[in-house]
Length: 335
Image (tube, rainbow, N blue to C red; front, side, top):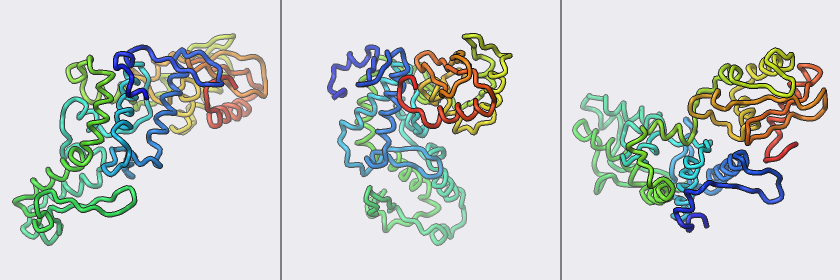
């Protein structure tokens, strides 16, 4: 397994080759490799992570049956992504990146991960009427479900079910609750994950060089899908220019797409649906003419961010061919 390799080997340039598929790894194959690995890691069938319904953010499953080695491997994958400058489609809350920099999760960290719980606890903290015991009816015993849906009770303090939350101890309750969710309950899983991450980046003083928000950018990319920026920075080849009618039609179609379809376009042309640090202009997209009108779909060289576009005879045909390409094409190689 990769987690058993010499840690120094993990710092070498990663070259990926898919058995039975064409393509020299100039970056595009590695992007797809990481994408497929991430999809497998977060497959709900493995129950290694739980997905918060309101935010779609993932967090370690405290009741996961997977071994420490599996979580170590995930840490290695994130470290390799940073080391190989590959952006990943992961959706961790900011608290993960704070923990990677040596900080513990706290109440305020619940806000972006579980806003419903955060707001409920905040209401409790702001409530200053003596009838708080009757209004909230909360003790120092909390409950959560395991992977089978079985309810598990946990006492934040000894005999927690006998200790009611009052005006005097509400801050202690909230602090202990957040500490349990973000630290204690997932200590085993996070420690294994952190071990794998450090196997790759141990010589990089991330806590000295970056803020947590910048670590997230390194791993996940920007969330600014500014396609005007992408259009302005795109170059053309093979006879196309920014004034070519098909190019005008292309951008008209792209700007009308949903964010989801725009992400699919990025995936199709670059091998990643993430926005690099610095914005979409950093992609240096190239649109190259790929022959006259044809029934062929557009294709791409994801290693070099090149979109190969036949000169379709109409806007309608261009839109049809383009949408088919971005929605049904998966896997490295020319169509």
